[in-house]
Each structure stands twice: as C-alpha cells, then as structure tokens.
Image 1 (cartoon, rainbow, N blue to C red):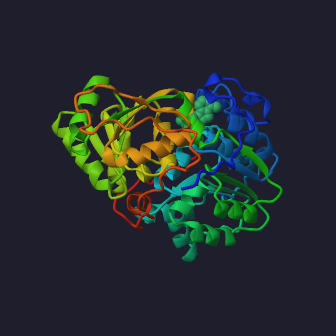
Image 2 (image 1 turned 180 degrees about the horizontal axis):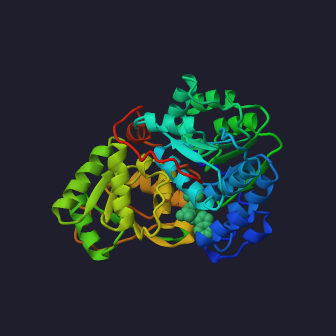
Image 3 (image 1 turned 90 degrees about the vertical axis):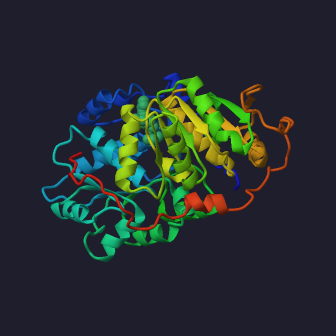
Length: 444
Ligand code: AMP
C-alpha cells in the first residue's frame, strides 16, 4: 500500500497540548450547541475542528484529511446540526445525510449527534445499517427524520424500494472515504451521490488521499476548503511502543504473561483474522481473563454487547480484527496489543491510535514472529522510528533478533506478501448478518 502523504497538516499543533487557534465560542456556534459541547467536557477545539467548523457553518464544501481520533466527528456534526436546526420545519425530511463504511462508525456518529444536539428541540436523527432487522429502521424513517446516518448497502436498499428519498438533502457528509474504497463500496457511494440534489453542501473526509479518492472528491466538491491534520504516521509519536520477538507457537503464552504484568483494565488485542480473534478470546477466558472477541462474523448484538462490556469495564480484554475495531471509540484504552503484526503498515498506526484517543497517551505492544519481521521493517519506516525491543522476556524467539531497520532506506519496504489476510478482514461485509440494534428513535 502506498503511503499517501498528500494530507499536509496546516496546523501541526498537538491535540493534547490544549493549544488551539480559536475557542468554541468564537466560531459562531449557537448557544444550545455550545452548551452541549461544554457538557461533553470539551474545552478547546481540536485542530480539525478549529479549521473546519467556521467554513462549514458558512455552508462551504469541505475536504477533510483526518482519521478517527482527531475529533473529526464533531468537526462535521456541529455545523451540520446547526445548519439543519436553522432550517427546521414542522415536517421532518432527510435534510442531512452522513454515509460511513461500518456499522460501528454509524452507531458512534449517531451517538455523537445525540450528544451534541441534545439541546436542539424538534430535530430527529436515525441510524441505518445492514445486518439487522430493517423494520424498526423503516418505521423510524416513516416517522420522519431530519438527519440520517447510514452505511451504503442498507441505504441503497431502502432507497431502491422507495422507502426514503434524498431529494431534500442539503448537507451530505462522506466519512472515511478511503475505507469505502478498501471495502469495495465506491460504486455504491456513486449511486448514492446520484440520488442527491446537485445543490448541497458536501463534507468529505478521508484519512488518506489515494488517486481514486481524490478523483471522487473532485467530482463531489465545489470550491471546497481543504482542512488537514497530522497525517497517519505522526499519530504514533505520543504512544509508547515496544515489540517482543517471539515464536508463533509461544504467542499465546506470552500474551497471558504480558497481560498479567500490565494489569490493565482495558486492553485491546488485535488479531489479523477472525478465527485468530476467537481463539485468543477463548484462551484468555480459560486463563481467567474476562475477554470477548469482536469481528465481522459476530452478530451485531454480540458486537454491541462486547463493546458495552468493555466500556463498562466488565470485559478486560477485547480481541478485535481491524475492520471490527475501525472507529471503535472507547476512551481509556490503556494498552493496545498486536498479537499479529499487520501486513499493511498504516493499519499498525490505526490500531495503536485506539490507545491515544483525543490526545491521551498510551502503550502499544506488538508480538513479532519470524514471518512478521518484514512487516516490522515496513512499519518502522512508515513511522520513521525504531520501536523499542523488549530485550529479555519469558518466551524469547528461537531465532536471533533482526538488525535494526534502516529507516533512511529509500526502499519502500516489503510489499504485503499477499492480499489474503487483508481481504479476510477488509472484505465488504455480507448484507444481513444476524443481530439487532435498539430501535428507538433518537432525538438529537
Ligand atoms: P473522533 O475523531 O471524532 O472519532 O473523536 C475522537 C474522540 O475525541 C472522541 O472520544 C471524542 O469524544 C473526543 N473529542 C472530540 N473533540 C474533542 C475536543 N474538542 N476535546 C476533547 N475531546 C474531544
């Protein structure tokens, strides 16, 4: 995978410093929204918020180069809520549409809208995604909503059956566009766009800008303001990272050992495959560690339960695949543990970013077996530094550790060996997998 460095941060100040060029109350946000922000505990806007909210409130199109963890949800949700609230009428119609690739992201955006819009009266939103019973979603739509958050498949399905119309959309947000591309959703996105009115505000977010995404952005945006925050590799800077060289057969034992040492209340363990995630969770359970697996084969209900348990602290270790973990927004993850190293270096940065939400610092530990050493080289080149090596531990690798990576090498690092592992987790989820989600009609 190419590293797309086209996201040039125009404000490199760190999220955690509390520094910012403006305050929320200088941005033109309305009193009810400012109140909700205050209640959410946000003191200063994050860089992406500082750059995006003003132009978005004025109705400008936006090209946002930012990944999750930067505060981008509020960056688009706050102006969206305000603009839709200003044009509220007695008859709710879908006047704002947010399209996002995964169910988890959709649910989280829905929750953010509820948080930020809690003092706005008579504004309704709902979230629709596949894999769950469609009836409650259809009922919500028929009752009337102002803001719709959707994943592409379910949206197109209901649209095709004329159960909703996008004719009245004034604000369109396309979230995680590069993930859409990875998951094979680009044709769906184009079909959705063709159902939108031409005259609208579009906010387009992507962590990276590969050529296909830039092309899509160009076709959707008019006179857009570009906002960018630190590119993916710099997320890694504030996280303590260490790697254990270990034989594949000893990884589970090492995991048990490391978990007992770190005694963390909230550890996110990454596995490259769904089966691997299940096996790890089962193993940990047997060891007396409260663990749950979360991946695309789990029903939505099981995923939601696992996530809730993790948030509440009833589950100490959540074992996730990359796609399932994408966008999981759990504050207070103290450790990320890479049971397998990803073959795509950017994935490493996305993973460890789970422990540094909203500027917090965190610890990321990785297990590297013999076959994964080439992935480590690619990761270290991407983040531009060496990851600390745990020199002596109970399950040291039977082969001697590799030499330090040459970070200056012009070589791009090994290509992913095959797309097998990648396609396993990044494949487009099948429609209608079991599970269900609460069907209440959230008032924003
Ligand atoms: P996002 O990038 O939208 O997924 O947001 C990542 C996390 O940052 C979420 O937990 C938000 O609640 C939090 N967050 C967003 N904006 C702010 C802010 N201005 N101050 C503190 N936390 C924030």
